[in-house]
Image 1 (cartoon, rainbow, N blue to C red):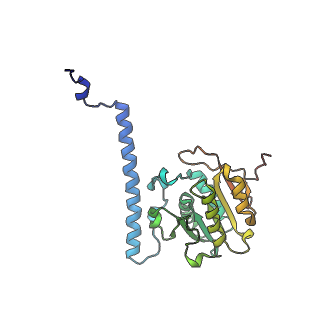
Image 2 (cartoon, rainbow, N blue to C red):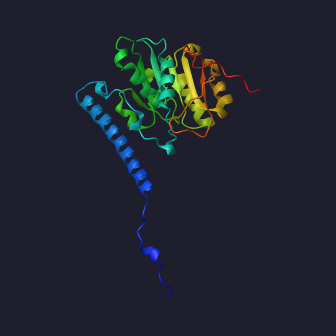
Length: 256
């Protein structure tokens, strides 16, 4: 009868570097969970007190680290630099009467919140903001509206034709998702739509479809390449119907 190998009874021993990496992973995970729990507690307290603002001022600035990406849900957050740049483009020229809709781009929404709530922004106009998002964790923000691209027009009625600044980052690189997200955008946009400030961030291979479904907006491919915090294998483009006032992008030359 064959003897069991001695190694079967040995405990798995990790190297010191592997142990350190594991400790760091758990520490970062716990820190993110703690950040989110704090946001949630603040939101619940505000709601219980009957206040509209979900995030207390001391929580500024908000970090996307509180919201762990779920790659199975196609969640890939922008880097802070990209999110801030896009947010500033939406805020440029905005007034108290402006309404900004953020569709499936929560990192840009968080950047918007941080900019308008910054100490040096107290005297600047604060436009209305809406976050259309599938992930219910973002319900800690009062501006959250649950959004399922498969039901593109299942939105609060008051949003119809009421939005003059929109950024959309459809979660999937498919014709179905892109087309339905465009339906949501067109439904929300103020008339005439070509005057609505629009940014769409999505894959390079969606270029012909995106410029087609947003033709009424005058959408074009810009020279700016959005950066994701943890990288992305797909080539990603930024499309817009306006040139960045600060020179952040120009029009991208055609490959043809």
